[in-house]
Amino acid sequence: MKHVLFIYNRHAGKNKTWANLSDMINTMTEQDCLITAYPTQYRGDAGDAIVRWSSAFDQIVVAGGDGTLSEAIAGATRLPEPPVIGYIPVGTTNDFSKNLPLDKLTELAATAVTGVPHTHDLGRFNGRSFLYVAAFGAFTEIAYSTPQKAKNLLGYNAYILEVVKNLASIKPYHIKVEWEDQVLEGDYLYGMVSNTTSVGRFRNFPPGNPDLSDGLLEVTLISPIRDVKDMEEFSRALLMTDPSILNSMMTTFSTAKVKITAAAELLWTLDGEAGGAHQTVEIEAIPHAYIGIQGRWIDYV
Image (tube, rainbow, N blue to C red; front, side, top):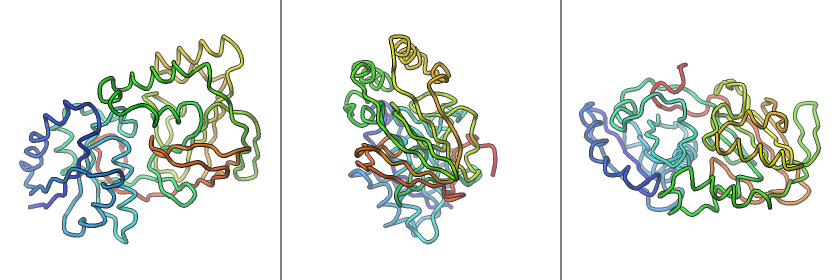
């Protein structure tokens, strides 16, 4: 019998999710698992719980949103032998699991304890690890200023409403970007360094269907709104969740390491959560740093 520590964030996603909590636990129990359930008590607790107790269990399963999983992995990577983490995505946007073909929570729960582990790159942001995206600018401030009650009630639409409300007042940031032997300097509305195929429910964003275990991160920069046409394109891209509408305003490249220096401190988000204000950041890929189970989301082992 496998002993499993089941960590869940009861505040993640829409409240109706947790009506299925007993079904998730029962499904894992049916897979010959003995489940110890632990609801997180504060921000960062998913990682702290793993550090405290993972050595007493055969496996960890985490249920929550992108932020909860990010916390869990940050905790796991603090250990000399990180545990395998199964993931049940039940957050508001679930960017990190966008390509998961399963939709029933019971199926996700079964996969979390029986699936094949795979490796995944992480990012390091000024010495702090992140799972799938570090970002600044237009939508990052809105992401963590949107009230949790609104996210629980409206889901992704809560973000859209906040963005539309603030779109006209969003200002660009002057930055210098350095990678390999390249330097780029200019004004940008939004920037991100990512290892994902989806951000903010935008499919294929960044473009190009990146390989999530190639030791590279994708850098995406979006130029400022210049006129009414740009404003219309932003609105269309948001409503249609189609980033390709912004291709003419987008600069992208891949690199293992990048340095970004701003004219003044920028507010950053890491995996959708507040990452602090920084004037200079150094971001690099950590190859094959995380071992997890997420169904058939990634087709390599």
